[in-house]
Image (cartoon, rainbow, N blue to C red; front, side):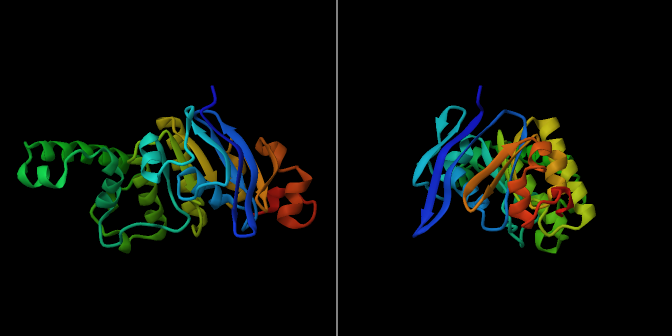
Length: 263
C-alpha cells in the first residue's frame, strides 16, 4: 500500500516553472531523499506538500487523502511535520517551551477554560502535565537534557537544530519533512544529526522525506533518492544507482566524476 504519493506536480511563479510533472511515492518507514543543485525546486516541493504553496496542477496524497487545497494546520493534524532550512525558533523561550509549542494541535484547553480552571488537578493542569511528559521523552531521545531550561537564543547552532527537530517530533508525525537538517553544521554535529535521524526511523518508525546538500550523508542514510534540476526529475533510485548516473554527475559537477567526491 502506498503511504504517500505525488503525481504530475507542477507550479509556476510568473513565467518561471519551479516544478514540472514531479512524481514519486514513499513506502512507510523509509528515508527518501531529494537532491539537486541550488534552485532546483526542492524547498518549493516541501512548501507544496505542507500547504504553503498550492500547485498549479497535480496530486499530493497521504494515506489515500488528497492534500492539495488543505491549509498547513490541517496537514499537520493529519500527521505531517516539518523542519526548515533556516532555524525558526523563539529565541527568548527555553528548549522545553519551544518543543512544547509542537503540542499545540493536541491542546484542548482554551483561554476561558484555562483561566477559570487552574491548578495541578484541574483539566488544564493535567493536560499540561501530560504534554510535558511527552516533551520530556523527546528531550531524552535527542539528548537535550542539559539544554532543557536554557534560552534557545544562547544555545549552540547544532543544539538549536536539534530543538527544531524536537518541536517537529512533538507533533507525533507519521511523515517528517527535513529541509537541510545539516546545513551550517560542522563534521561532529553532522554525525550526531545522522544518528538522530536513524534513531527516529528505527525507534519511532517515522517515514522521513529529506532535503540535504551533504552527498555523503544522503548516500549513507537514504533508502531511495530523487534527483531534480530546474524543477524536473533527472532520475530516481537507490544510492548506488543515483551516484553513477551521468546526468546527476553533470548537474552537480558539469562533468562525469563520481558523486562521492561531492561534499
